[in-house]
Length: 487
Image (cartoon, rainbow, N blue to C red; front, side, top):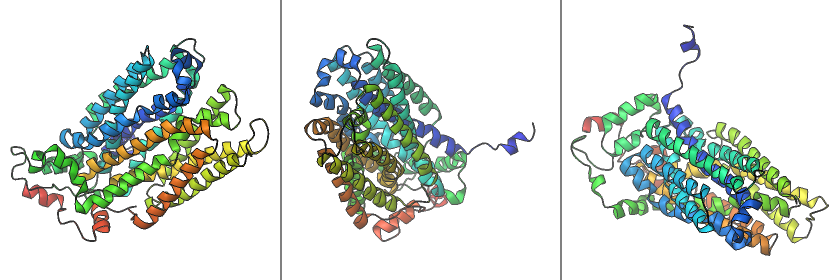
């Protein structure tokens, strides 16, 4: 028994913190995996008859996204003021409250209100997951650690699809209410765990002048001194705890607009562009409306399309695992470029088959080509853009704007997601191929922009990334020890 501690050493606290932080991504994945199958259930349509209209169907699915975009814009400011764990916990609680409203909805308007509340919470917590993980991870494992929320999201997709599939045979409205009951319960549990056990970011402590506490935080996290990112503040701080820093005295407006200052403006716009195009590649059109896409390709029965959707979620989850393992071996830039090329080709292939009337529901190889392409597309997205875009958008920002700029880019993601979710059922109703050509074109545009403007960040410290974008070493970054002495 005495050999057990040395044979099975305790994992470092930063790893446990990253796992707990990432686990919140389950909630986003569950909602994405649940809403498509739920709105396709006969009992849901019986409860809210208007949902059979393609425009209303798109509105039900997408109404979560604009509130998420709005709250995401302020999420970085909330996390900068209250701390990363508190910002995440507040968002998760609001998300759970929205899911509870959906579970108890007695009218379509109440269900939509629940989705709006859920969106407000989702926008508050989701972007800050990557920010916190970025700031508590060693440089050498930052890529792998920051893919954790994406892995949890894909696991949530699997849970969402199969929970919905399992409850679809239940009689009455309980068939579509149960998935939201599960989601609300899980949210409240994750809120409590995040509030109690998520570690605070040493970068956040340093930004508020608490250098000694930042050093203690690094020690508790178990990160070796040579692997720690340097901690610095934006302003001079004369007293550690008794005096409020000038940064904290800034007005909310000035703090939010700091992301558009000359030295970071280009990086902010690049992150906003990449996160927006991540959705315009069509991934959530595939995830939200997978049952309809498979039905259109020839899987006529609702049960078959549900199962096909669940299998696609399993494929996405499975390929995300090697993506996580090799995230620090594959370059962010090359993943986005090569992934975009592959996804664009697949989208144009599917659109071309539909446009050429080569997809016949009852017979022919065309329908199977489309079904296989959907699986390959989802897998390729998950191992490339699904990981690299979110990591890149967070790590290219300097400390003072990382939370605000990252959550702004998530706002762009939500707005684009809204457009895809709202228009996909309409496009599918009017044209079998238009959506595929649109999504493929967005992939091509992103590849071109990435070739021109992206710098590789794989394996680089924040100081090295800053130097790559500005052409000079940031003067504000001094060592942890110097800052502690200064304080």
